[in-house]
Amino acid sequence: MEISPLIARIATKTSLNQKELERFIKFAIVGAIGAVVDFIVLNVMKIFFERSGLGVGWNIGLDPNQIQLIAANSISFTTAVISNFTWNRLWTFPESRERPLVPQLLQFGTVNVLGLILNTFILIITDHYIFSQFFDHRISYNLAKALAIGVVLFWNFGINRIWTYRGIE
Image 1 (cartoon, one colour):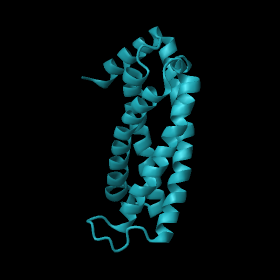
Image 2 (tube, rainbow, N blue to C red; image 1 turned 180 degrees about the vertical axis):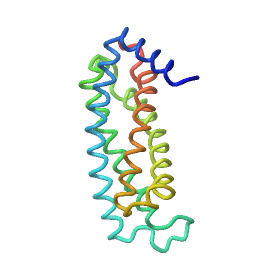
Image 3 (cartoon, rainbow, N blue to C red; image 1 turned 90 degrees about the vertical axis):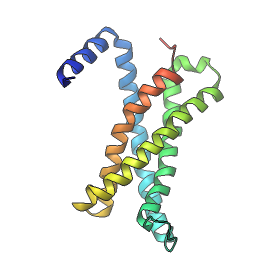
Image 4 (cartoon, rainbow, N blue to C red; image 1 turned 135 degrees about the vertical axis):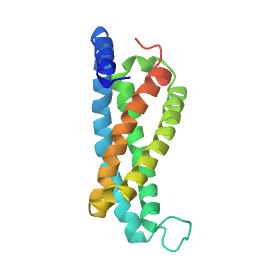
């Protein structure tokens, strides 16, 4: 399928459903806030893990830098997910507050665990094989993280809209 017909279909669909486009924009704004949280926590935790020597001498097939990055990413991604869930429930999908909190949080969490796996995979692969070839390691993993966030944004919106927030007009 060509890209331009696909874009035209998406544009037609969103122009017919202005509310859904507004929701996506709100979701993206919430995601941008989450991305700021994610980047800050990622960099603070990465520096902390470097200084503490996390992963040094573990001999598990990953170098300490990758172990530190995976650990930092897990914490930063989880922190961003908590922020995103809160703001999406309050602002993007306010009608969802009529539903019980715990089942909705479990659905959102499940989607985001899969998002974390995807995010971490993209982060580690693009940092190691692409960006680290051209940039200092801090710039490299931050560029890889930006790419991972961009990809996972669409995964998270799509699956959460279909499952976690289904039936909300």
